[in-house]
Image 1: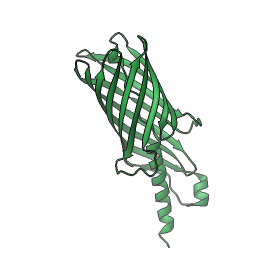
Image 2 (image 1 turned 120 degrees about the horizontal axis):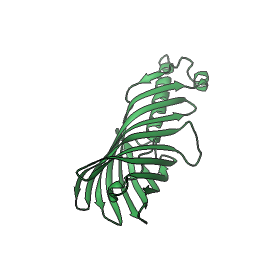
Image 3 (image 1 turned 90 degrees about the horizontal axis):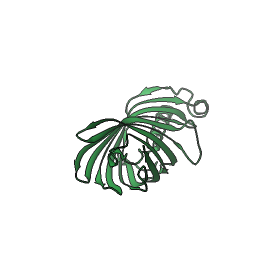
Image 4 (image 1 turned 90 degrees about the vertical axis):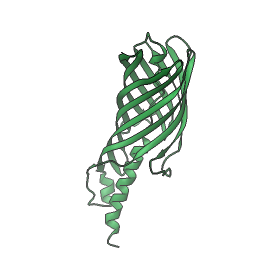
Length: 231
């Protein structure tokens, strides 16, 4: 019986961190600056179900062109859509590059550093992570269709227990930093269609799982609709 109070805070912390990790939505659709060599900037917006109903707004800026392939710096922010909550958010910053281009077939890479926060009854969690996405597919004039594989790995997490948790569960719970708490794998099909010279409609569907294969705490599927505006 003496081990129970020590186990409770550990399990609560682990549960909270896992929820923070899996509640962070994956990135929006593939940036399509390489669809239009005259565009240097792109705005992206997507709404969908990715662990929750969320909206993601992004901005990309071409920072270089290597071998006629664009290198795009990207920033993005994600918030819950159905019930907006300033305590739950994800912010990304990274670089999208085209690695290989053979006619209309392309292989690209999307690398981002990610910060996310999740505030709940148990705790307030701030987490830093890295997200690596490799995508490849057919990019023609009217549109594109690609497959992607993504790995999201937590690097550092800060956990602050709530007063309610200390009062009702474990008064001696300690706050502080911890290392990696796991990762998330995702596979998706992504596509888009250019409805005008500057505007494209996008869609993606896929599935995800934790690196340990435990899906008990998350909806294993995702789907979103959105758009890109290039200028």
